[in-house]
Image 1 (tube, rainbow, N blue to C red):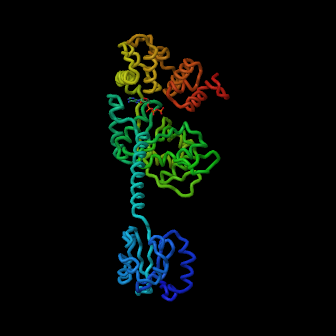
Image 2: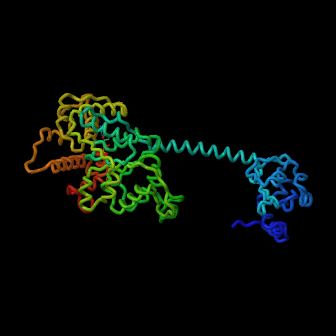
Length: 469
Ligand SMILES: Nc1ncnc2c1ncn2[C@@H]1O[C@H](COP(=O)(O)OP(=O)(O)OP(=O)(O)O)[C@@H](O)[C@H]1O
């Protein structure tokens, strides 16, 4: 049921009282006219704007006060004029509203209001807004650059069938927009593939944000991923903090070592993937996010699902497309190419130019590289630094590789066991090399400290008190 304003109320003493006690105190210019176009009420702000005394305005015909007014037309047609640009007779320009007050179809009065008193101010505001928008766009672009993917297909070196096939498959996946799970042993180049996929996907102009699930302590993971509001907990940063998912909006988030995601967080991540929205810690409303998830693991996730350590519903959500990056021992023909690639990278970055002797190529090609390309890269770097002269010779090769030059398969041990044996030896050698300084060892091995600790514990190299045995 529509309610009409009664003419007798509109111009009553009560209304006048209300107008004076409320509208007179507002810093917004307001007036009320009767149907004939006489100004019946006008507040102080409006009078000040016009520069007129009240008795020169009240009960005067609107055109006698402001000869440019369009109010007579509004009262005649009953058509409101919202946010109209108006030049007053005194030369001031403003943005105004003119509203016809109706009793049914009959126009019984008019309500006038100045929205922006000074068009120059408005212009300045618009200009400022435009500048802010340009600035914001600039920062967004810079942020995209910082969080952008660094590598593309040409950075993935290799001509073996295994890597060429893998690249082809990944290129196809890049054109789709489904979540991808990249599986492969440590150091095979999973992150490199994630970068390249993002860089050739339709999301390439948006951020690529990496999260190492194994490196973030469980109690910090939620706020890292989803952010928090100001005051969400003691020590929370003023103004709150944006989470990785929001940072990656419209782009890609790379969840490295997803197999290490704590079980409780898995449920929260699943919710985000299902609903497409996140909730900041301490936040009141969910925030929509549009993010493609690329996860990576070197663990057998289906086994973890069976053991109840990984949620099956999450597994299916992240594993829409699956990419298997082959280990280096299955594509040994790529080793010489990779050696040359890392040597030339070193020359570019440090200016050191060294060559590798034929014998060294042969030995490195025979070795099985349990730490894959990361290990090969580290070995090259170490040999370049430690070798004398401009040729890297057999004597520059780390001992543990020379010892394994002709690896003897131990009777009774499977591949996994042997790989672990190699890994243990590499870690132990590195630790010895840097005087058992674990941070330094983690740096040399280019793995997070937390991962090194876990491996040390697993291999029984670390005591409960985190001291090396
Ligand atoms: N095909 C390749 N061509 C050139 N460099 C490579 C290639 N694959 C891997 N690398 C290099 O090897 C190192 C390890 O790669 P990356 O970090 O992508 O491995 P990962 O599988 O993600 O390892 P992790 O499982 O330990 O996180 C990086 O320095 C990377 O640039």
